[in-house]
Image (cartoon, rainbow, N blue to C red; front, side, top):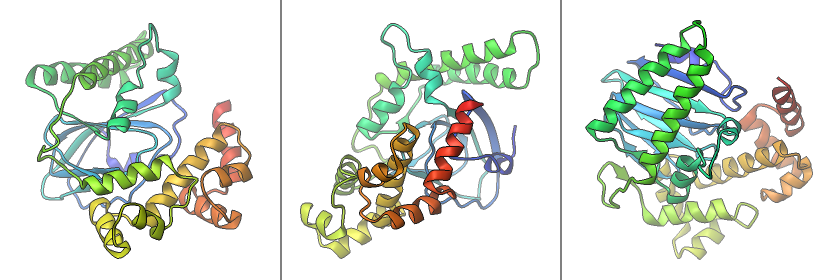
Amino acid sequence: MQNSNEVLKLKRGYLKNDFEFFHLKDKKNMEFEFHYHDFNKIIIFISGKVTYQIEGKAYKLKPWNILFVGNNDIHKPVISPEEPYERIVIWINSKFLEAHNLDGSNLLNCFLLSSKQRLSLLKLDNRNIKVIKNNLSLLEETFNSNEFGSGILKNALFLQLLVYLNRLYIGFQISKADSDVEFDERIEKIIDYINKNLNEDLSLQNIAEKFYMNKYYLMHRFKECTSTTLHDYIVHKRINYAAALIRKGMGIGDACSECGFKDYSSFVRAFKNIFELSPKQYYKAMLKYEDI
């Protein structure tokens, strides 16, 4: 079982391996800012007192709840130091899953559907918990093994887990009134609008008028529901979108315009603030990762 400090030292933004597996347990004050990754993430909550905020929804976690965090989802945990926080976290490279999609079965469906339905939570019954526990235990063993075929077995167990989780999520239903999920439908609609219109005018005034809300109330309510400001949310989403375009080979100037920035210098400052690299440095860094 790893210490969370070791994990936090790793680069958060980009995953060069196919997937990574972390089993973490700690009891201390840990505060996280909202962030996102270029990779997908699965969180299997085991114990503690944690509310996980993802894209405007707050999930009050219970043992063996599972969260799907897509590579475009802004998120953060709110952790109480009163109880030990134990969880398994799996980072997943989309390219690895895409390479194993067969017979029309898309292993990324759990992330695509959770994003589309705006529901990151999967609840397990006792039978499913038993299956998941067994799979995770075997998977964790392979990460610590140098025996013959351990790499092959690790991939097989991981793909088995993803198939099973996709099946569960596809058949999962949750009530809008579920007390473990807190959200404001108006803010949810605003977030959906922002995500679909990143290259449009997303000024506070324009959004407030479109959704018939007082702009000061909108600012207050958005911060209350998401723990981040409307402006910061939009900037993070635009920069994330720009980074994805740059990785696909789009010119930096074109990416700046496409993601809704009117001023190039503001775009570069925001990009460096989030990635700690200029757009040009980021592009070169991604080329190096692709070559590894």
